[in-house]
Picture 1 (cartoon, rainbow, N blue to C red):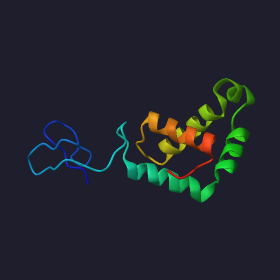
Picture 2 (cartoon, helix red, strand yellow):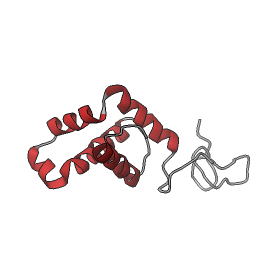
Picture 3 (cartoon, helix red, strand yellow):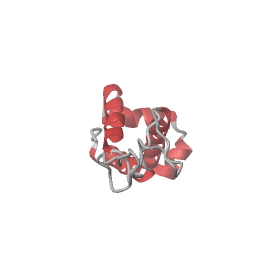
Amino acid sequence: MLRKKKCGGDCDSCRRGCGEHCSPNVKPRTEYGSDLEEIRKLGNYLSERYTARSLIDEISRVYDPNYLAFFGISGATESYLTHFNDSLGLHIAREDIRKMAEKIVERGDITF
């Protein structure tokens, strides 16, 4: 349940707190503001369905060869992860998704 503050924000995602029975949300976050728990949710979702190699193969099948030639496999992976981020209702920053995509492509590591 979201409680509204005078400032119009919701108390459950506020990082400052407004003082009137609302405490700030101090969950661990990345340098770009993404909640680490949401990054773990996306990582768990992907690792249940794919290995790093099978994810890259799936991305290669889904995207047009011209798209892959222009953006590269890292850019296509970033786009694919953004799709999962949006469809799962997560709020992960674009920069964190970019880092995740690079980690998958460069190191073959799907755990976050």
